[in-house]
Length: 186
Image 1 (cartoon, helix red, strand yellow):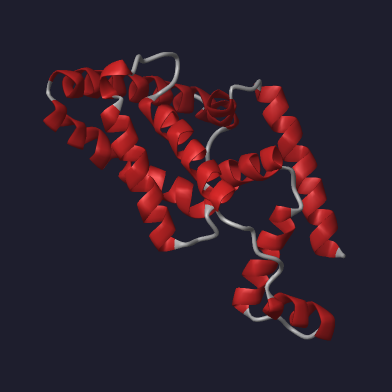
Image 2 (image 1 turned 45 degrees about the vertical axis):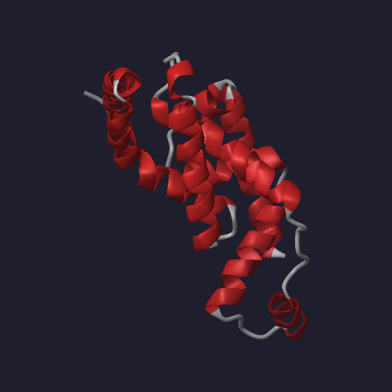
């Protein structure tokens, strides 16, 4: 069995498990804890990478995601996606709301001085430079790059999550990688 067939099989199994857990939680809200335990780490990581590695903000937003999912549990209807995809959609909306209320900061002074001086950057400045390069990407490109390399999602999972075709996701990935290479090589 090829790796892609195994991955698709794993996705189907996860969807079936999710359907069972959701039905159980809908009949007894205390069983929602199983969904929370199953996906708390995934949602935390998803948010963490999108809020600039801020642990406390990521924890708060992840909690909001699960509160919202719990609050709307009885209206949830399983479609073609897993419950994790549903949670990621909520998380995406919460992160967007977070950035709408927060003023985006300019490039950190440490990075500016590092770039101006031309000397070696420390690990923090290098990480921040990478985030600055990511900021040069379009919203969609940044999101897809983060999902692919930060969360190691399959192209199919990213396409399902963003409600786009696999080919559209591949095209965005290709363009984003070229932009990053060009920016970081300058």
